[in-house]
Amino acid sequence: MIAVVDLGIGNLANVRKALGGVITSDPYAIEGAEKIVLPGVGNFGAVMEKLEPLRGVIIDAINDGKPLLGICLGLQLLFEGSEESPGKPGLGVFRGNVVRFQGVRVPHIGWNQVWQRKECPLFEGIKDGAYFYFVHSYYALPEEDVTVGVTDYESKGAKVVFTSAVCRDNVYAVQFHPEKSGRNGLRLLENFRRL
Image (spheres, one colour):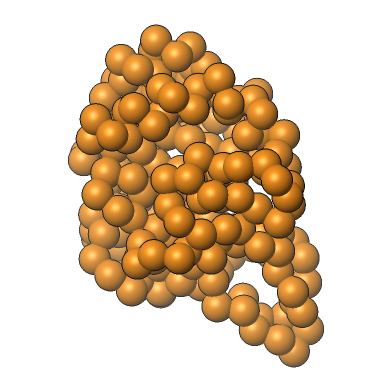
């Protein structure tokens, strides 16, 4: 079973529809799941507060080798913290922090390409430079070698190249919304389901 973590935010039904499984905030259901999806939209600090009671269950699942997929804010929550909520720690699965876009239009909304930097099973059968749908104002700055995809965001005469996908061992995360990304997104979710 796949547990889609319900933090009371976001469009979880489309994620569940693509993957199967259950939408839940029950720690026992999450603990018993074979795979976990951590979706998220909203404010880093507010969502971390909702996630705090599940921190131990999620970290234990990762340490037990269960595949976990973070989506959008779910990617950001896997890092140590965010400029959006100074002093509020993230899950700390990956070293690094989350920063706000500077010099470009915020938020970054719309279709953009993901350039694969390393092999990752999430992107099996998805061509390099494939388009995915983004909605975010912050992005992760990893302090370790976990970036598997990057995206070039250009606006207002400026350009930011940011990490849009990370992977290490059994933990995967994407800054974009695969559930809103058509065929490429569905393929990525199917790849996760098959892990």
